[in-house]
Amino acid sequence: MGLGVKDVVNPATVVSFKFKVANIACGYWHTLLLSAEGRVYATGYNKAGGLGLGDTVNRSTFTEITTIKGEIKISGSEFERAVLEKITQIAAGYHVSFFIDESKKLYSCGSLYLNGMKKVMDVDVPRLVDYSLYFSLSNIISLNLKIPKLQDKAIVSVAVGAKHAACIDSEGFLYTWGDGGCYELGHGKNVDLKC
Image (cartoon, rainbow, N blue to C red; front, side, top):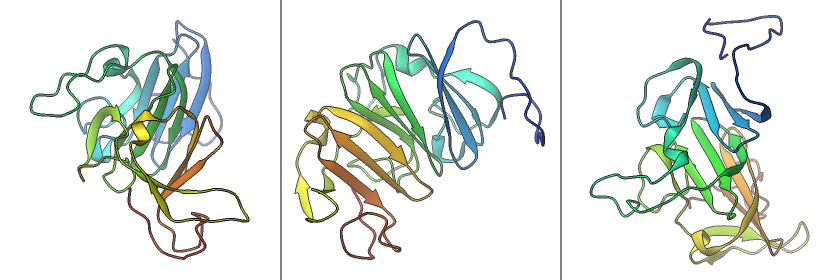
């Protein structure tokens, strides 16, 4: 991926970056790249807008997500004034991507099933995760409580699997959502949890 060709069996160097690569995240059919300067680049299959490029067009080379550099302006949306800062962490899953900025805000784009949006819709540009999520206090004590205003929490880590996601806030609380059919959410039940 990101080489401009469909399949590469043996590892190949991706050339032509004019910046230092700090981190990568591999989703189901897409890849995110984080530069040392906090900029994010995406390549791959773009179903549901998971690349965060403002459309659903697939990309064969890494393309910068420019909406992360400044103000997002989407008419008729409650997200019009969201301003993203330098990105410090990225995560990619099944048609969804997550980003944490230096002010510890969590953003996402992609599949309506995992993106954490209050309004159930696919999102093709990174937006603030705005919904209450379930959380688990620890591996021993598991509660199904809704925490209001996740967007007001300082998020320090995010991870995403094929069909579920998790994040940790600065107080050490773990939040999980998505497909729970195999108990992967840690809530003691084999049920799906929507944001």
